[in-house]
Image: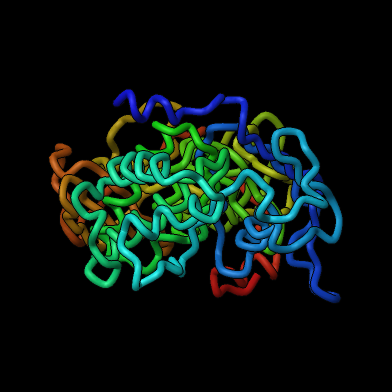
Length: 386
């Protein structure tokens, strides 16, 4: 890290956000309901969820563009209820970048500093620092119309960061970019955030993007927070079926509980599965309950019929329907007694895989998660009926 960058690193205690039982309604329509959330200073937090889940509304509440119907938002311990947007320690990068096309790169970045009546020498120094930080060296005199989409995105980022806010709010800023450019800027954003230790609050509906760049993810649906955790926690241990389905690919086995206790016996289309009771999430299953058993594809291994496996493995007979090589991975589609399942394994894993092959599939019992079915409003996010 350069000495110039080091001079811009702020006190790590600055930039915390506490959202306390915040609700937002428009007439009879409640967009957010009793949202409570603590965002540590210097973290990269992503608000993730389908369109209409309330994530952008929450971002606008933090910014002060709108006021909560109920609840409080505090920044660094200070109640922001009566603090206007321009007096909050925040910057914002919109999906619509709103750059000045007749200004140069440097002039766009300097605009906010001029409004604050910063002296010319300081403006030049700070603009040069942030042009370097976002990787636009040598482009300070270039007009906005001469830039690529990714370069424009970097200008918008620098224009916000040059004011040195303790918090930067980003509302789907990369959604209009092509995939390759988007990935480049995802890594750039994370690197810049680590260097400056600014608190980033990022909004997206793209779960892959969220898992790549975030320290923590807030999964939202229908105005409610469904789960908060690291990308690894949310993927490996989702707390309800919505999160399990929204983050990554998952096999779903609808079933009915046959026995409860230290073990759960669940009758599914792929046969009866015997699982430890601790794999149930969000509810206590009772005999007769309809449930969904969820399995990540990489947890399902493929074996020869009759092969002896470890005692903690749950097994079922299956037929290979398709095996698709995707780079270093092979994605295998299987039919387990009429239930479609997907397994992902390393392409160089020993063992022949071919369409029509009779196999034995297996998964560790504690790798499964058992959930209650989705409610009607949550199922609609996936275009399903409850």
